[in-house]
Amino acid sequence: SHPQKKSAPQSSASCKDCRENINKVLELYSGAWKKQEASYQTFRSQLSTKCHGFEKATITQTNTPVGTKLVYDGDRKRTLQVNLEIFSTFYKGHPFPNKTWHTCAVVGNGGILANSSCGKMIDSAEFVIRCNLPPLSNGYEKHVGIKTDLVTANPSILLEKFGGLMGRRRMFVESLRSYSHSLLLLPAFSFAHNTPVSLRAFYTLEDFESPIRPIFFNPGYLKSLALFWRSQGLRTVRLSTGIIMTSLALELCDNVQLYGFWPFDVHPHSFQTLTNHYYDDRKTKTKFHAMPDEFNHLLRLHTQGVLKLHLGECK
Ligand code: CDP
Image 1 (spheres, helix red, strand yellow):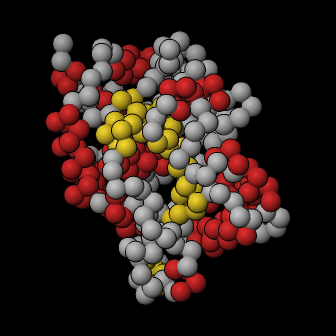
Image 2 (image 1 turned 135 degrees about the vertical axis):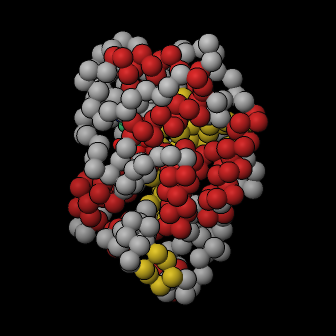
Image 3 (image 1 turned 45 degrees about the vertical axis):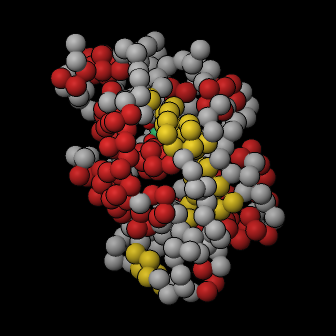
C-alpha cells in the first residue's frame, strides 16, 4: 500500500479519545524508513531559497549592522533601530561552520520521550538541538541524552524561573551548566517585551564568564519561515519552537532526526497516558500553537524520507 494515498489523520488539540487518529498516524508511520535523497534536496532547497536559514536564522554583527531597523516578527508594528549598545551584544562571526553536519537531532519536549531510552542515540548525533532549557539530569539522561550544541529559551521561562533576571542571577548561570558551551538561542526581537530580558540574559552570561554562547533569532528569518509554512498549508498563529528548529536543521544537516515530537496525550504504542512534556505536564497554549497540524506536516516529511521522526523506544 502507498503511504501518500492515505489521508492525513484528523488533528485534535486534546487526544482523549483518539485511538482511531493514532492508528492513522501509525499506518503512515509504520514500515521501514529510508532517506529519499531527491525529496530531501527538493525540500531543503525550497527552504533555503525562501528563508536563507544558514545566513539569516540568527543575528550576527555581519548580517545586522548598526542602523538596521529590526521589525518584531510577533508584532509587525514595532521596530527597533540597532544602536551601538545593542550591536555589541550581537554574535561575532558565524555561529554555524561552513559545512553541513552529517546528523542533527532535534529534541522536542514531548512526554513520549519519558522512558524512551533514546539518550544514547540522541547524543550520537553530530549536532544536538534542544528547546526551552529542558532538564537533562536527575534520571532523564538515559532517555533524552546530555549533549547540547544549541538550546533555545523563551523569555517566559526567564521571567517565571529566574525572576526576569532582575535580582540575583547566579542561579540562572548555574542552571545552564548542563548545556556546557552550547549556543543559547533567544527570540529577543519577536515581541518588544522580549528584548530587555534577552539583553539581561546576554549581560548575565558575559558578567559571570559563562561558556554558554547567547545568540538572537533573526526576526526576519522567523517571518519568512512563518510564510513558508503557510505556503505549505499550515495554519497557525505562531510556529512552535520545535518546527522552527526542525526547519533550521533541514538547512544545516544532511540527516535530521526528530525526538520528542508527539503532541497527543496517549502513547502511540502502549496507549498509556502521557504528560505534555517529559518533565512536567504544562499544557501547550492552543491559542497560539497548532502542534497537531504541525505534527501532520512533520509526519508527511517522514513518509517522504526528508527527515526521520522517532516515536517510541530506541533500542
Ligand atoms: O515553547 P513551545 O510551546 O513551542 O515548546 P515546548 O512545549 O517547550 O516543546 C518544545 C517543542 O517540542 C514544541 O515546540 C513542539 O514542537 C514539540 N512538542 C511536541 O511535539 N509534543 C509535545 N507534547 C510537546 C512538545
